[in-house]
Length: 520
Image (cartoon, rainbow, N blue to C red):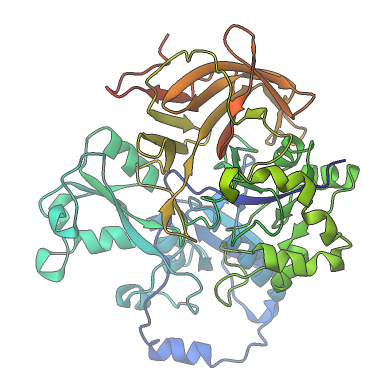
């Protein structure tokens, strides 16, 4: 067994449209009634409460903002707010009923007494405080403006006179529809939509000039993505945003990484050829079964807590859980993991190039790589733009930089994916998009990928190769070119997108002139 430890970090890649409907942040003093309510004893029980339905706590929400609230395949509302509401109901001895509706309706339900509470990222303002009592703020939202590529909107001032899309009833709608003299753009210039996804679709169709929505706190922030040897991206379920797995060759090589989230057995299965140390924040039953079967121990935030992880604030429910190699090393002994296996000098010796210049760290036995040697002629010599669309609608984009010879990672809107550690754009020497078949697992939602063989694409140096892949012997993967000849990709940082597909229609690659290279 190799004694070269691969360190992974599973992190949700929050790309695509996020429909946060305004989180708190107003520090307006509570009204007199609110102050009286806050001063009441905290010993309330279910028998003291008058709820919409006896014995039930009814919560209204707009379940369109993971991780706070979203729906699973069964239509159940899940997320941080749902968990908080469940805890409140349990404390009060009540059953919990969650009603999903549009944002305006969720507010109106609480105001009219059709629900007991509303939890949907509701921004505190004076108008709402007249009809609703608010808890203390527990999350802060950030308003963002989305514009299409090539837009002439480069500042807030440029939005005057433009058609602005928002989600109806949200903070963005309130701010934008205010009169110009009050800092807004006028109601006549604002187009309200039922949800943020509809607004962004209208933007893509050219019906509006920009969209103003709330962005999840740190939703596009990634620590460590620019220094990982390999970045894997895949969706464990077709209805959820894809997750990222950052791979490092040793514990000591791992900088600050995050946000750490649910571990996925797909990633651990793909990396089964390595001596892997999973780093995660909890996992589902399938992942737990996989770890137990192979006797793998994860560094789990739910187990080690602040001994190895930080959240950046005092809110332990924060989605921005981070860690680093030094913090992980400190807890290995308590988890009965040997720190001696975290790095093997003999096997990492070839990570130094001539002139004692540290090379780009690589993960041994994962990809068939070469530092030089003959490559088959590329199928396309001009492949400079790529976009990978995952089943949930999330899209990860890349643009080739001829100066660096790398593909810069972009969000769905074309903005660069930055590494929060350095403030620089994440870039990769190799782009690999691999397809395989998948079937639903017994829960009907989680995908079980075929990891034995499939097709795909490899992009490097502005060139494109059509490839097939199988399980390898000297490496986890064996690659073959379009003529069936073995292919070893060039060494360097690699991004791998894993798609549940047989044809790859979810991928778009363009040349310098903007022509689609994958059209039949």
